[in-house]
Image 1 (tube, rainbow, N blue to C red):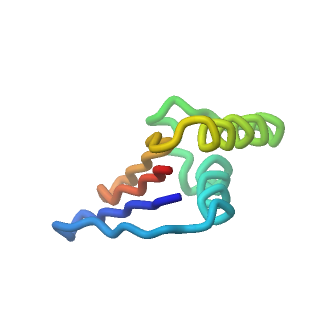
Image 2 (cartoon, one colour):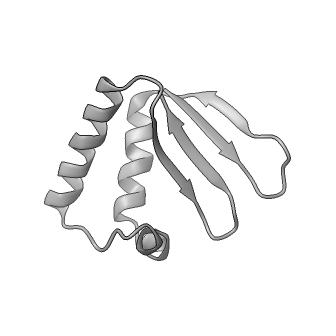
Length: 87
C-alpha cells in the first residue's frame, strides 16, 4: 500500500510504502478521533458507533483487496495537509 502526504508549505509530496496495518489504524483513528469530528462532518460522516466503524473498516478492506490502484481515502485537514492511501 502507498501513502502520499503533501503539506501546505511544501511543493512536493512525500510517497511511502506502508504496511496495511498502519493504514487501517490511521483510517480507524480518523473515523473515531474527536479531533477529526469537524473534518468528518465536512465529508458528511457523523458520529459513528463502534459497530458502524467496524463495518466501514470491513468495507474499506474489501475495497483494498478488490480494486488495485484505487484511491481509497483522501483526507485533507483544515491546514490544507493532504493524506492519501492508494494500493
